[in-house]
View 1 (tube, chains in turn red, brown):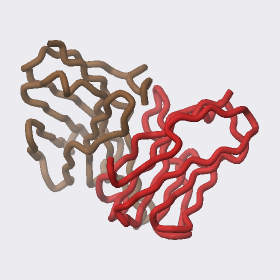
View 2 (view 1 turned 45 degrees about the vertical axis):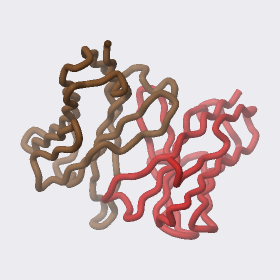
View 3 (view 1 turned 135 degrees about the vertical axis):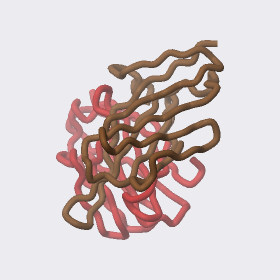
Length: 113
Length: 115
């Protein structure tokens, strides 16, 4: 989607290294979300943000941290990557929070070796 | 993602037929539901939504039906086309703690359209 960009699209990293994924939006939406998608599990919420410097945990937040210093950027950091964090990561944005549908980015495929 | 179709229920239809994809949701307090389509290598894409005060909502070639009695949601696609081949999943909006809403996604159904 033109209004939301994820980078990088693909990344391979080694176990124990820090990794940061970036989500950038041009829609000026208040709410931003990070999900991971794994076979057999569907989309699971990692962290979300309801404004600059306002973030909260989702259902699978262990091993992840986030930061939102500007409305347009939401960063997801794996402090010390593990093989269990190999996944496809999706960022989503919403103007009104979880009562409305989200717009998703194209995803980042992360492989931890 | 590329492997999102693994381990999923599948539905195979002929081009031009109608498709019905079903979803059972978990919480009777859910008040908002969404269907998403995800093509291989892409992010989920909004298709249609419905609020709990409705039983049916129609879009372009798609209809969503909501049966709150049995907590069941369905997506009907008319005159299915090869471009409809994708994973489809539903999401339900659940209120937690009085004011916090959480969108929970189902695992999805893989739709394959045969020409």
